[in-house]
Image (cartoon, rainbow, N blue to C red):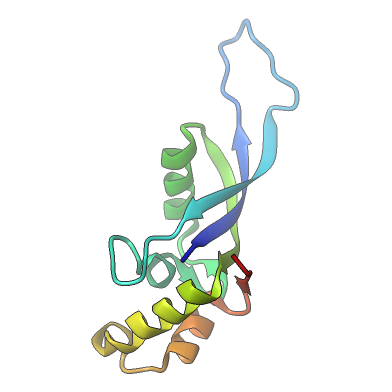
Length: 123
């Protein structure tokens, strides 16, 4: 069972005056392992994403800065990449916690928060 949140991130290098960097900003892809459904921060998708977009850009940049230890200028969500076993476990966890999602179906919950940004890959 495997899943990762994938983001496009633009970082800025901060250097002392006697050092120069070119380019000063770089775009990169960042993958963050998703916690198993029902464990740890498994509700990250609900708390951070809306319709496949980052819900609070400032908070998202701060998260990315904590992951990367460099200043982040921009961050956008690309996809939740998961295997079939993770998808099944995620849907079961959503279904078993109706209070967290106003009783909505797993399909509706995932669409509301992730839009069409779910990519199922074979392990």
